[in-house]
Image (tube, rainbow, N blue to C red; front, top):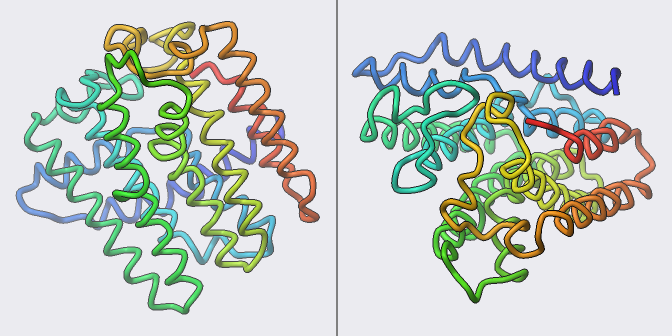
Length: 291
């Protein structure tokens, strides 16, 4: 695990250099817009999605160094989704990664605009990268589609729709998992597969299962975690009657199902001939994480 954490930190540092250059050159008016965009982009975090992208590229013979802008587009989308997710009309969370949420720092209206701006930045970056060749066009399109009405936004909509629902169950839960969380976890893996021409189907399946595992762990941590360690409010899922694996299965059964999901993730990687040890270790990291 020590080697895994070192590699995870290395991917994060690689991405932070790209992000730092981008943020330093950001010069929008009024200045509060750029300030609020930078505030959330540089708010820390595991940089899991860029790490997935870089590690899969390395494993399949690609070049992470030449694909930094697609990693940036990916993280712009992820960051915009967190800003909007924290809003009072959505999950209404005052903290993100141990700091005040964007709307608590800059106001609700400007947080909405900062999120809008980051989504548009991601589209602009993806459009620029798509001009390199057909594989880059396909990878960029996959990313933008994953974030849209047939992906992450659909999952967000369902998450809101099924609050306080007595009828919603496993099928609806999987829809939320596979879209709200899974699409942006699958995207970096599939983008790497497209760019290298390797293991597209395997990365689609693995990314979907990893997204389910990640969200199950989130649901469980909302019950068992520590607010200080998580950097956000805990117990909100139950308070808002969200559709979670804990609500559907109960805590003990949810933990068993998370263990089984981790086993499925590992099984999906077994037939890949390249070195996917980082992805294998990441599965265990996601399952055992405490924040």
